Amino acid sequence: MKSTIKNQSKKLLIVAMALGVFATACKTTNPTAPSLPPSSSMNMDNSYSGGQSNKTASGLNCAAAVTAIGWFDLIIDLNVAIPVASFNEAMKHEAVYDANAKEWVWSYNVVVVGITYTANLHASESGDNINWKMVISQQGGFQNFTWYTGVSKKDGTSGTWSLIKSPNANVSFLDIAWNKNSSAGTADTKFTYVEPNQSGTNSYVWWKLTTDIEYNGHYDIYNASNQQLTQIMWNKTNKNGEIISADSTTHCWDNTQQDIICTK
Image 1 (tube, helix red, strand yellow):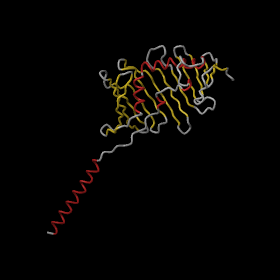
Image 2 (cartoon, helix red, strand yellow):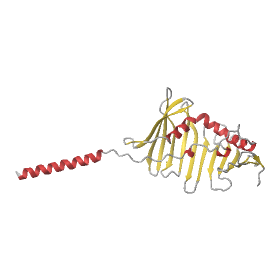
Image 3 (cartoon, rainbow, N blue to C red):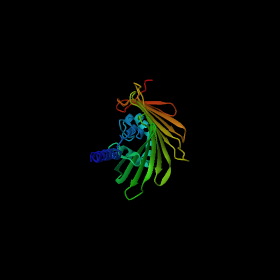
Image 4 (cartoon, rainbow, N blue to C red):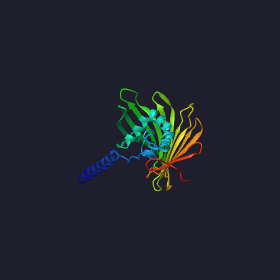
């Protein structure tokens, strides 16, 4: 009898241990989602004009700076406003981990010009990198279109984006390369227009945040159609700055965007 009870106790102990192992194995793990790339990785900085457009900038020199970059803004506004808006909206949402796919997904709706889009931003680990993929569907329109992909370092110091033009024109359109050094307070983002066989193909806008005391904001604007480079430099706090035109002439403005004579 004692032997029987002892054997039954052993069996119960084995069953209990097995159930414990099984329960542990079945627990759902939810790893911490990676940080999203910075907003500057997909948005241009217009602080050089105090946020003014070329129609409202009070001085001609500042207005010239706005106009110089305006043609590139137009390219982006007309073609990638939806993917940029979808990325900005992701900042307001939390990711959910998909254990089967081994990826995180941010899912949400975003409204652009009165039209609702469903965005699903996917992120998966690959060594020291995070791979990104944005899939967008239009309410009553196109479905599950992969509008852009990207790769970033896990530590958030650098990355790239590759954007497609549109669901109706499935060609490469815009390449973005970005860097950010939070400890040094520096960053840069280069937007390159890569649509094939266009007069402006390989044009770029390169934004830089530096530690320069006089001008810590910089833009290099290269128009491949006429091979001209324009440079804009400004103080992000005071808003004064200067523009160096393709012919190397320099024009300056003060912190109220009024024209002034350059002192150097």
